[in-house]
Length: 194
Image 1: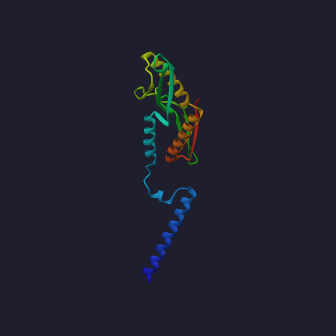
Image 2: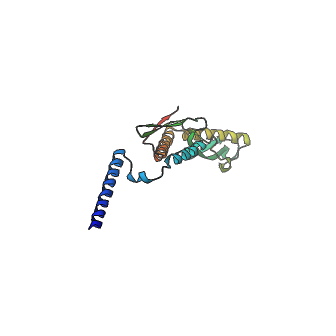
Image 3: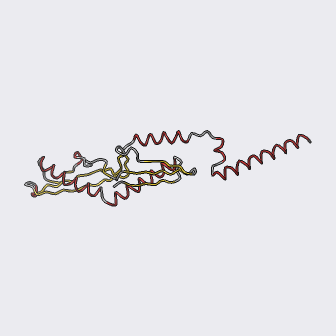
């Protein structure tokens, strides 16, 4: 009989401790199991942020396009036509922005404040001259360079369209929000440089 009363008293004590821990974790907003885990979150956060800082260039949109350039020329039907394919990467370069993020903590709430450079082309020469398609006619080296420059100007302008820049910004905001949220931040505020 004494054995059963001891077990019942022990069970009551365990229930009381569990309820107290649950109430404390509910009040603090922390899962109860975290009380028993080793805290390695800050070390993990520092490792991730070092990796982010070591990667200066971030691509948030790739644009594949092509431009046909036709020129009057002495030759087949008096014209030269070539198709210039391109592959441009839109993103940000953080190399010259050492203080691009700051994590502020107030009342246990972490806020990441990011100041990101403007979206730009990360590869200035997106036209691969080896993949140029000759439709008809032949161009000498000087004429080929002029056609290449004309195609590059058009392709860059289209790659840097307002719609593409807005899409790259949206992709960047989604990426950095997920990254800093996974590092324990409650909110992420992003400001773009002009």
